Amino acid sequence: MKNSSCDMRGYLSFIVLRLLHKKEMSGEEIRKELEKRKGCKPSPGTIYPVLKDLNKKGLIVEVDDNGKTKKYKLTDKGKKEMDIATKKFISLFYDLKEDFERYFK
Image (tube, rainbow, N blue to C red; front, side, top):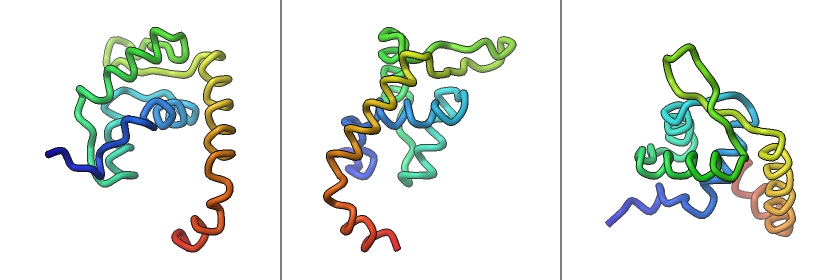
């Protein structure tokens, strides 16, 4: 049985877009950042298909890092998609604002 605290499939594309909005990152850096935030590190088999899908959709592109590590960054289309997704996320969960404040004081 999988560790349910690592099950973030429904939000993973959104989270990856949010992380890449802040800075260019490799798949491994994304995995480490998720581990810091969620307490578990998703497998490469979870992260890399998401990166491939976002790349195929034109939301992210690979960045040349002098042949070291493959990094990714948002495209203009990705930035627009991330803004739309953030607004949807906020509108879906805004009515829970008081609950969030109570739990995250």
